[in-house]
Amino acid sequence: MTVNWKVSAVSPQPAELAEAARVLREGGVVAFPTETVYGLGADARQTDAVMKIFSAKGRPSDNPLIVHIANRSQIEELAAPPDEAVSRLLDAFWPGPLTVVLPVLPGALSQVVTAGLSTVGLRMPDHPVALQLLAAAGCPVAAPSANRSGRPSPTLAAHVLEDLGGRIDGIVDGGPTGVGLESTVVEYIPAAAGSGGGGVLHVLRPGGVTAAQLRRVLPEAEVREASAHHEPAQAPRAPGMKYTHYAPRGVMTLVQGDASERVLARLQRELDEAHARGERTGVLTYREHADALRADHVVACGSLGDLESVAHELYAALRGFDEAGVGFIVAEACPETGLGAAIMNRLRKAAGDRVIHV
Ligand code: TXA
Ligand code: MG
Image (tube, rainbow, N blue to C red; front, top):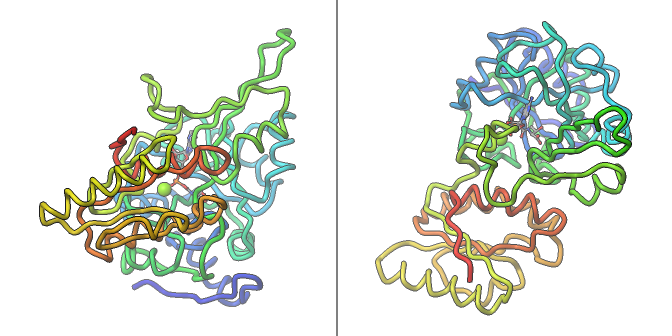
C-alpha cells in the first residue's frame, strides 16, 4: 500500500513529514516533490532500502543515483571537500537544480547508490517539502526521478501514483513541481598544477541551471557542454544518459530547422500521411503555432517566448499523448539557447533520436 501524505508546498505540516521521515529511516521508499521533478527517496546508507528504488522503478543497477542533502555541512560526511571553484557553484546555485559530482568517501554510502563508481552526485533541492523532509530524516537520501524507468519524469503526484502506486511505501504530495526538468549534473576537473589556466567543468546532463549561468560564476573555467546529439564513443560519464528516457508510448519524431514555416509544413505533412495510414496522431508544439497545425491531439507546450514555461509543461505534455492514446507523434524543436539545451536533450531522448532536419 502507498500512503499519501498531502502537505502544503510552502509550509508543510510537520506531523506528516515526521511520519514520512520515519518510513525513510526504517528503510522504506518515499516519493517527494523537489523544485525540479518528484524524486523517489531511500536512505542512501541502507543497501536494502536503495535496492527497493531500483526494483520499484525497473531501473538498471549500473545507473547511479543522486544523493540529496538538507544542509551543505553534510558534504563532509559523504565526499571529498569541494574545490574553491565548486564552492562558488554551491554558493550560487544551492539550494537549487545543480548536482555536483565529487569523489565519494569510502563506506559513507551504500555501493548500490554509486553503482560502484568512485564518485557521488550531490544535490540540495530548493523546495520546502524536500528540505524539511531531508532534515527530519537526518540521513542522506538517494533519489532518482519517481517514474518507471523510461517514462517521462513526474511533475505531479498523480504522475508518481500512475507509475508507482502500490510499488512504494508512500508519497508526500506537495503539488506540482517548479522547473519541470531535472537538475544539471556537473563534474569539475581542476587544471593541472602549474598550468596557470582554469579547470574544466563538464556538464554531464543539461538541466535547470543553464551553461550561461555556470559560465557567469566560473568565468575562468572551460564549461564543456554534453554533446547536443550523441554521447562520445567512450563510456558516457553520466551513465543514465545512455538509456531511452522520457518517452511516451507512441513513436515520436522531432522536426528541427531554422525556418519555422518549413518546420510547420513538414510537421503537417508527417501528420497528414500518418492520418491517411489510419493512425491516431499527435503533435507537440508551442502556443505560437498551435493554431497552425491539425492532428487528433495538438499540445501547446508552453510558449517559445518563454522557455521556462516549455520546461514546466514538457513532461505532462509527453504523458498527455499516452492518455490520448496517440500512436504517431511529431514534435517541433525549440531553440537550444538557455533552458532550450535541456529541453532539446529530453525531446531527442523522448524521440529515441529520430530527428528530421528541414
Ligand atoms: O532533478 C533531479 O536531479 C532529480 C530530482 C529527484 O532531484 N533526480 C534525478 O535523478 O533526475 P536521476 O537518478 O533520474 O538522474 C541522475 C543522473 C543520471 O544521468 C546519472 O547517470 C547521473 O545523474 N549521475 C548520478 N551519479 C553520478 C556520478 N557519480 N557520476 C556521473 N553521473 C552521475
Ligand atoms: Mg530520471
